Length: 348
Ligand code: GTQ
Ligand code: FE2
Image (cartoon, rainbow, N blue to C red; front, side, top):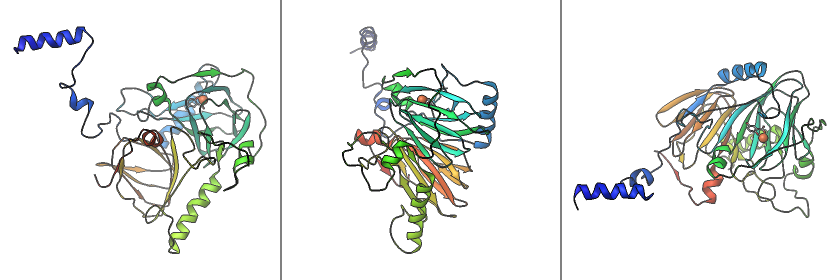
């Protein structure tokens, strides 16, 4: 075959809407993942004042829906995504403000760093948001947020927006324009039913998304302390020396609380260092309390309270605690597990 004939073949492929594998095999099927997303840190000391300025200048209301500011990964070409599958945002709600009711096919959670006075109302159930709490808004659940106190409140939102977008699975509906439910109970209906460890209401069906909408800081804290106390007494339970961890689970199945996102809390003793590990799939970590060093491949990032770190797929991760270090973490691991794409590695 002459070069000319080959050129004509490629031109005819193009005209016919065809492309050969052999000229782009390595890009299509690399030996190992080549994430576009970069390892990256967003520092809370930058995030908070910017959210505050948005609070002064930008109203919350119908249309824009939320004063949420996305962490945009520098490797992702200007898209408002922390990783190719995960949306992470700082949401700011001022005193007495109301974020209107809506629902969407994207699943969501909130993790609270500081402040008080906001209730998120999920399918009509008012759920108080307190520091260290994890609150769920599973896919297609109605939700709005309302603030009854005098100080602004800020939290981390996580959603599967990029994944749902790539899957062409996005649906969205506005709720009524009237203000969301104004009640302010300390315990949500979902907790009355489901927040009793090991006790499952008889007759309750198993569901893909957790019916428990609030995972309270005091329970998370007790679970992590328990693991470390057991370790001190010579009993098993920790992930590795000095490193405790819990996964927020769906009490009807024991599986991940949400279908598309894995949610975890980790605690390292002062001076503890994790083994270096890498996994297929991406994650975002937020420091809840303490200080440490997060190593992502060759990069070493000092992190403090509120800082958020994006970990791309297959990027080696190692965490070192400079003080007691509590970290919240969310990832897209359930997707990879469901699709039999899970892979983990030790030292890179
Ligand atoms: O609070 O309902 O960060 O719908 C992005 C989309 C938060 C929310 C976000 C949302 C919300
Ligand atoms: Fe929403």
